[in-house]
Length: 333
Image (tube, rainbow, N blue to C red; front, side):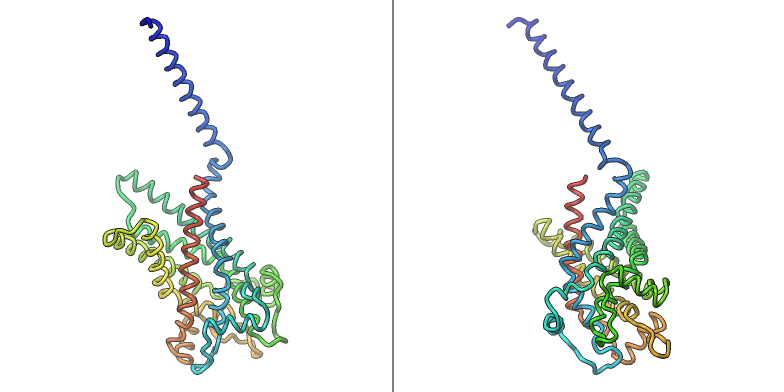
């Protein structure tokens, strides 16, 4: 083969490679400009993925949440009241109705996740991206305090926005504890919200907002701080796979998140369930008043009633949420 022939073949190969590279670049550019990669969708995806993941997790965990609420409301106002178990509560619910009664309030739970988890994970992702960009510009790294601050802020904002749906969920789940003549028999979360607004006013939709926000901040602090620490310790002290380390750290974080947030969750449930008596007064005037009355009349340990059930609700919910949101992030990157 002559040198001219070799030269022509080489030039032809370079031309083909150049054309393929150009076509590849055009393909990538086209992909980047499709609907999924428009600026609006890139900003919205963290919120969308967060909401979907939270709703899937809630569907899985809803029966546990139903049992947790019934445990918290049992024996209200007396120290020597009934001390039901999670199994006993579940058996009573099934015996009085049917298995699907464990999903009472699911529509409210899904609406809450649609609002709360959408906002919580969306805001957190947005805050973290801004912090990461600022750190990159300054030649630094994002610290734990900044991550924790982002989690606290995102949790607090989201909890306040989602309080009406959370209130409707508590009312729907506690309705079955009332005498038949006093039950509202809410048909859906929309019916519950409309009923509460008609009888108590719009501002009543934010009943228990203070403990709800504090609970969300405590929950996020527990998850962030102990998840990061547990994962770091497991990484240095074990030879487990990354997946095993993540799942174990999530379980540890779930325990501490439950421990820190349960008293506030307990008070939130009591405040959101309460309704005015014949004298027109509410049982509890505020979060502090509820803490004081429960501690005096029912004992300090009452705040941790149902801890096991609460943990079983918090830890798997966090795991399912994080796994799903991570997978959705992979699909939509």
